[in-house]
Structures are given as C-alpha cells and as structure tokens.
Length: 204
Image 1 (cartoon, one colour):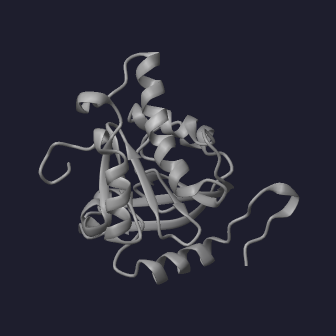
Image 2 (cartoon, helix red, strand yellow):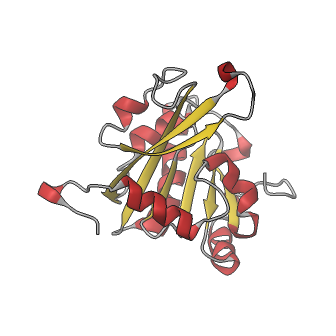
C-alpha cells in the first residue's frame, strides 16, 4: 500500500521493484532498452521541427516543453506518476561517475533499483546503474526542470510512468519514446501527432 503523509507521496522501493518485475519480467527498467524491447507498442516523437536535436533559443525550448507536456498530459493528467532519474558509479554505493544536476532537479526521489554490470573480470570496468524515483500527481509543467535538462542532454535515462507501469514516456535529446499498453493505443496516439513523427522507416 502506498502512503501519503502530510501531502507528500512516499514510495516503498521494494514494492515498486516487485511491481516492475511483475509487469515487465523480461528486463530491468533501463530506459534506453525500451525502444527495442517494446517495439510493437512504441512510437517516437521528435521534440523540434525538422528533426533538430538541441534547442538553441527560448522559442525552441518552448516548443520542446510543449511537445513533451502535450504527450504527458494525454497520458497522465489527474493521475499519479513515478518520475525516474539515473546515475551510475563503479561501485554500488559510491559517488556518481559524473556530475549532473540530478540531485538538484530530483530532490525528493529515493533510490529504488541498482542494475549492476560485472561481466568484465576487471573490477575497474564494473558499472552500477542506480535508478531514483518519486511519486507525484501529474500536472502540466510539473517536470519542466527535468525535461529541460534532458533536452540539453544534461540528464539521460529519465522516464515517467503511471503507477501501474503500463504507459512509459522516455524523453531524451531530440525526442521521446512513448510506450503504450497496446499497439492499437500506440496507433491512436501516433495518429494524433503525425507532424512530430520521424520520416525514418523504422521510426528512429
């Protein structure tokens, strides 16, 4: 059961991890893998006209945030969501391997998943991806600080999902991968925003 003391939404990381394993037993919640793992339910939207990757003006940042928020509003308005961010380290509990604005932009998050890659026999090449989550009521613009950092590639592997983990929005510099519950639902969302689609035959 999720608790909500004093107006803040609290996450039990073990329950959230168990829910992910129940809903998505094939692989961990590593956002860059969603594109191929859920290819039959995925659509990619570009975040700027003409497939431009990075915004360079106030007007372009406004377009990026409008496109992100338009899809997020369609998915999540008046519902709770999990917002997930990431860092990595060469040890499970050590400092991040690089500096990002993640702690400042996601201050209420808790660490809920560590995905470790220790295949290399040399420990110096081991990596530990740490995922952090918060739960909030979705409202237009409530993640704009994170989304702007994503657009600048100052943050990567961010995703936003409903509390049943059925719909996933993974923004990144240049666009967003949106995972829907069914191919038909994916098609309906794609058809509402055809101007934002990639011209690439694989939708990249």
